[in-house]
Structures are given as C-alpha cells and as structure tokens.
Length: 275
Image (cartoon, rainbow, N blue to C red; front, side):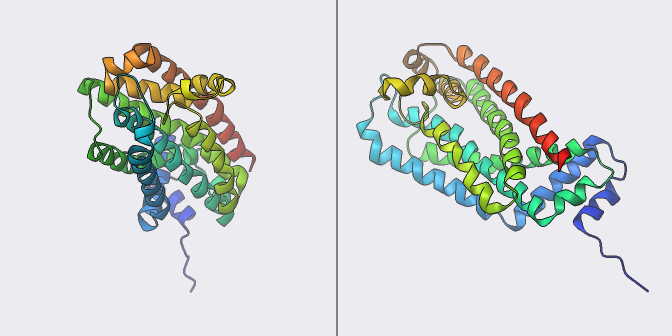
C-alpha cells in the first residue's frame, strides 16, 4: 500500500480546487507568511540596516545638512520611512526567485487556480510583512527625536501612502524575481533601487544636488512620495520648505502609484503565464 506525500502545491490545490481568486489569493498569502515566520532573516536584516543608516544620517551627517524651517531629524525620518519599504520590498524578489528556482512556481502554474492569484497573494503577504519593518522604523524615528507637526489624520494618511508605495514596488520586485530565476541574481538585480532612493529628496534637499541631477531627482516617484509623506506628517513647516501644499504631492504620488502598478502588475502576470 502506497502513501501519497502531499507537496505544498498539492496541499494548496486541495484547499482551492477550482477556487475563486479570493480564496486562492488568501491561501498563497498564507503560505508566504508561514515561510517568512520560519525564516525572517532577510526582512529583519533589511530593517536593521535601514535603522543603522537612519542613525548615521541623524547623528553623523545631520549637523552638516541645512533644511530651512524644519529640523533635519523631521526632514530625514519621513524619507527613511518611505525608502525603507523599498529596501524591504527586495525580499519579494528573493522570495519569488527562490520559488522559481525550487520549482514551486512551475507546480503552482499547473494547478486549477487563477494564475494571477499566485502573484496577488505574494504581493499582499509581502506588503503585510513590510508593516513590521515600517513600525520599527517609525519607533526608531521617534526615539532619535522625530516629532509630528501636522495632524494625526495627516500622519495616518502618510502611513497609508507609504504602504501603498510598498505594495506598488512589490510588483516590480516580483517581476525581477521571476526574471532573475535564482536568489543570487535577484539580489544583484535589486540593487537598481539605490539610485531611486539616494538620488531623491529622501535624505537631502534636491536643491543641494548638481544641476544636471536635479531634474531626475525632482521628478522621480520616490521624491514625490517622500515629499507627500513629509508634508502630511510635518504640516505647514514642510509645506513652506517644499513650496507646495500636501495635496499637491499626494495627488501626484497616487498618480505615480497607479501608473507603476498599471505597468508592472500586467508585466508580472504575463511573465508568470509565459513560464
């Protein structure tokens, strides 16, 4: 008498046989969360690395950087909170590449579940995992002197915008993971995120950069989202520094998020279907 051995993929299909996209998405998300609980090293290391950079900028470089009307700690912490979700999103590329390399994606592709559910489930789960890193970064920010000067409603709106921004880039990194095919390559490909974080208004005012760099820095999505988060959390002081009200940046930040999802989500799904 033989005993069938249930693989993770077969276990998934047993619960989602001809499942709808919601059920299948939740099952995939559950699997990602369980895997993270068993090996959380990547996201923890990424969070600690971000905290270390925050401390360096706060106490080593902060005295040399002038931000008119806003204390540097209140200028830089919103930038670190926003860029922190980008660094943590790199976990998605590594996780997806590992699933491709081990053959799990091939098994899932053969099952009778909506194909988009596999990617939506991972994006939702990885965004949820990011909340842990976001909470740690915010706590460290307050510990080193960050204070809100806007309304609590604005602060909650800023957090929601950061989570949305993280969800958007989950799709980009999922695509990177599928293209890379293995963990090492995914880690290497993910380094493209550094120009988006450092050539932005996250850590220093764009006006202090060389003129040839300012055009890119001022108009790329990270700067727009960072400025929106900064204006929402710091209120009139930040708006005076930035030259526009919070609504100006929020509208543009949401537009960037919608545009990026509209590009990278279909590309990721198409790549998954193609195999």
